[in-house]
Image (cartoon, helix red, strand yellow):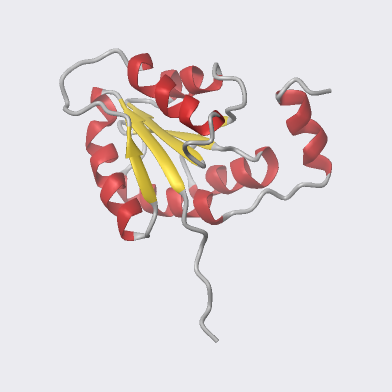
Length: 152
């Protein structure tokens, strides 16, 4: 019997100029893991307005064109704010493996935001793979997710 690996997903990815380097590295990493990556830009390290790139990636999740989204910037704060303005997106700002794990387990985060200027690259791969591989715990957290999404 062959052991099954993690589920392959469609992942939307977007960054501003300050997250461009990590975006490019993550596209290669995610592709090597067998995921289908949809790149929403930006396409260089030239200064841009991040909402122009982050919002379409977040919208891809709620439209069903992507299973999850990863957004990147200098701190990740603005990118998380933009993504969370899209109804149905639960984007967590992550900075450690534990923050990524809890974002999935307790908050069913369907998007994460990472700050390239704040999180060393050596942590990014374990953060992303933990987030991709961790299931939502359900249980007592379901009610809270419904409250976040305005359903109760």
